[in-house]
Image 1 (cartoon, rainbow, N blue to C red):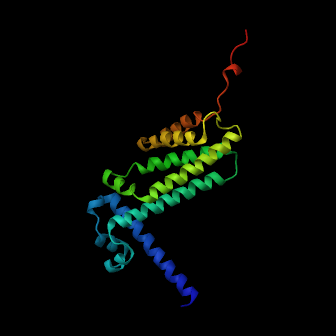
Image 2 (cartoon, rainbow, N blue to C red):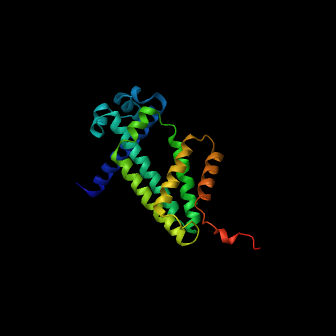
Image 3 (tube, rainbow, N blue to C red):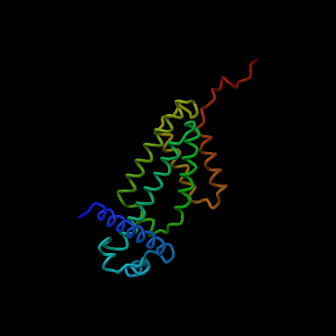
Amino acid sequence: MPKLWNQTIEEHRRAVRDTVLETAAQLVAEQGLRAVTMSRIAEQSGIGRATLYKYFPDVESIIAAWHESQIRAHLDELAALRDRPGTPGERLESVLERYAFIQQQRHGHGGELSALLHRGDHVAHAEQHLRRFLQSLLAEAAEADQVRDDIAPDELTGYCLHALAGAGSLSSKAAVKRLVAITLSGLRPQIALSDHTPHR
């Protein structure tokens, strides 16, 4: 089979898969997980049920695949912010702020859907990946004297992730930015007591 034909088929399959994922996610957001069927997803995606079953066995597998693609996109976005020009402190602030807004967006997932989305292996793998790269960035910022070095980077990573998880309950952009600012204030290098003790 010609290479160009192979590429065309692969692109078509990817396009169908992407359409199915987005359609299913939208339907679940509008109607709830239990109300969405394979027939409805196929109809809204513009494909036959038989074709849909060639891609996915059930609604849950579609939603899990959609969530995995969302996580991958978020990690890529955070990595791009980490790798852009600027000081380690500036890049760290950009990463933490974007992470906080991602947490805020996740707040819309209902109980049953949230349980489904967060039980896959891909979630644990993504969290480990995020921890490693955030820890590396914190270590880099500490070396540049832009982050405190009296606490190990892995502990600071846990502090950041736990603190910014609170963005999930915030309703405004301003509130998220305030949370990020408070989190960053806890990361700043500590001034020794002797540095600001008045001389007698």
